[in-house]
Image 1 (cartoon, one colour):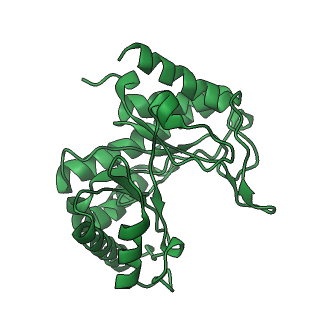
Image 2 (cartoon, rainbow, N blue to C red):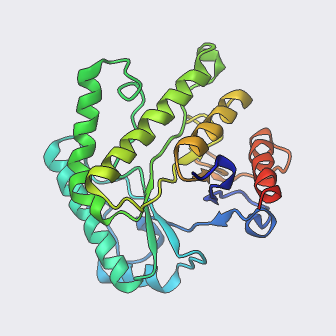
Length: 266
């Protein structure tokens, strides 16, 4: 069994002045693919043209042959919408693989869509089952094409919400990864790893997570999943833009300690 310190950590970080994490810590940079970064996809609710696929294939550098797709615009409120969205993801995968057959495609928040209160059971068994059914709507169609599962496990709370924040974080992570594992087992390829996205800031961007909450998130993800993707470093509220890198930031000190442990054991 792979131990937590053996599992890969990838970077989707966007800070300015960031050091070469690949060279220093073996943290692989994974390029994100979004609809508006390349020509040929005018409407995020629609589908890209051949120009978009060609531009992605021609310009994206993927040293580890891993790229991550993040597209959140397609509607998913009804079963018909979820199934239609899943079919669109299949088309994205098929077209990109036709141009780059060696790429491993990771999918942000798909086919398993993050949930908090239903996942942790607060709303009862019927709500848990409804969430699972929604994931099945997507997974039954899309999971056979998924190379890498990237559930979004950003956290919404701090210790201000009560002493149970760490327990809440752990349960939330465990249940979402279990659901990704279920979809993979029933509909997907068993060899497809689960690399959740995690973020050191509270989801509303108002502050960094408490140190013990962040440590719980990192530890639980590395225990339950196959690795993780670090996200952060870009401020979306005005003035928007990359945040400066801080080598001594508490969130990074936590990650760096694990990376140094990993280097000592390999």
